Image (cartoon, rainbow, N blue to C red; front, side, top):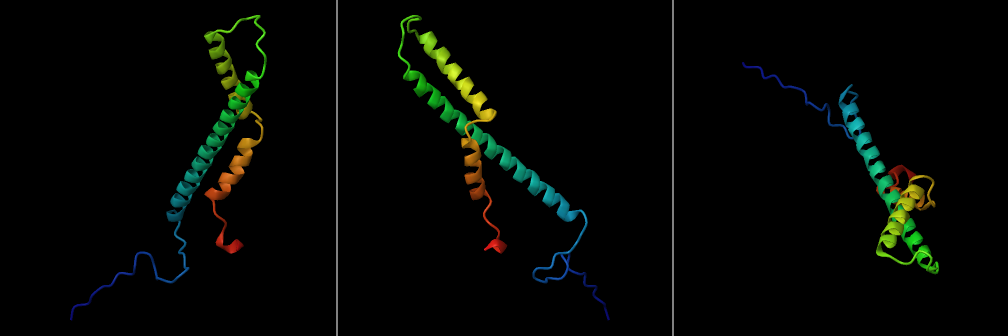
Length: 122
């Protein structure tokens, strides 16, 4: 009579909800998940800061348009380019430092969409 050797299943018994504690296997996936999560958070933060920068740039541009032209310097295309670049750089500096709070508000709103509530909190 030939005996057949049956190997145990690789993943262990198929019990619902049972997680086997195997050192090293879950840590790689957990680290990969954390790094992907932190990368997404960094991308979201950059997008929110960039959005705030665009908003501030538009705000500065519109504010500058309300100032009456004095005629002291005249109006030239070069001056328009310079003031546009200045407004853009000011907007970047303002948003990357403390900002107006728009990027923080966007982070809260979009972060809530990004990570849905846990099932246990319902």
